[in-house]
Image (cartoon, rainbow over all chains, first blue to last red; front, side):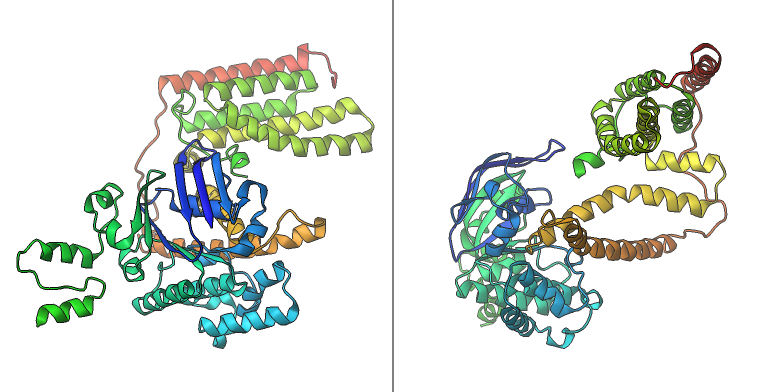
Length: 269
Length: 248
């Protein structure tokens, strides 16, 4: 469980990035953090691995105070895939890149090889095993960063803007990966501007604006509240907006607003 | 690291010193630099430092210049120790160590108060080749970006269990590899992208491109420049003909 207790964070420049954030993320929960640029989303997730320490308040990860625990120790529990894959890839080969984290955490040679194979296979990177990670395409690099994180099987997976540079097929695969992670009991935290990507996952949604949590609840409820979203400069998923427009009509047909294809099929009847 | 970097990177501030013509700011920094080389005792150098700090106060840069001094002091201490070991003269060693601080902060005074655009204008005044000016100014402009990149890379690697402060010196140097490789690769990629973007915006299409701003010195600029040269002449005369020669 991750517990933010009245957490505020002020940057050395004096900018207040988090303002009295209180938030509890339960084990196995899928959580999306949305908000405009500068709302404090990335600052919030950096507190989970102790990369940033709260100016006031406490962040507890499995009961451990992040101010008293090193990032390396917290990272064993919390894997963060950062927005820009070019900020972490450096090894001579893709398999070395995956093994880097495993070696840092002291996995045995056998287990390192086993976990590396699993990651390469799961993320469709087997053919690039001996290739340099620097020659991969943007989408492949993104998959590689995810493979690196999941290789050591962290309890919590944080994905910071996972859809940047991904085509629509990759996005669909990413939705499946997040669902798969959720079904295996992992806590998945996704920071994203891509509302359409988040909608089919139906996570718990936390909306941030100016360093504060302004809405928190299931996606179906939070994304219905157009006023809150407008205040946080977040757009509604198109299917939700579509459904709301149809509901305004007295004889509106049934629309499954989770699935665009099904909605259209219903309307065409 | 970002805290220390603040001691070298330009930040837009509204002060009387910032509003001066960049050529005058360069002149003041050069005069302070030269005076730091001319002085022959630690006390004289302390006076130069007081002048630099006073200018920093006018430019609302006291906090930031103190960071520059703090970082420079580390190297300065090294210079002092090496000199004491080889010359066995504490006064000379102290003079060299303090001189290093004065030289660095007089230079940083210019870079802290001149924006990259102003820097470009100053370099153009000296009729330097456009490509050289562009390369230098771009390098200056990218310092904050590179610093931000470094921090983000460090965060990413620490999140994969890398402990930068762990182990002996050799291990710590080795730990820098996962930081340096992405930094260099990103810089090379970025410079390639920048070159393409510049060419697609007609960089180099004409030999003499026009400027958005043309700097013209005001009366204040001329008065400050003349006063600075006058004070420098007085200081140089005093150092060589009035003040006694002493390392202390």
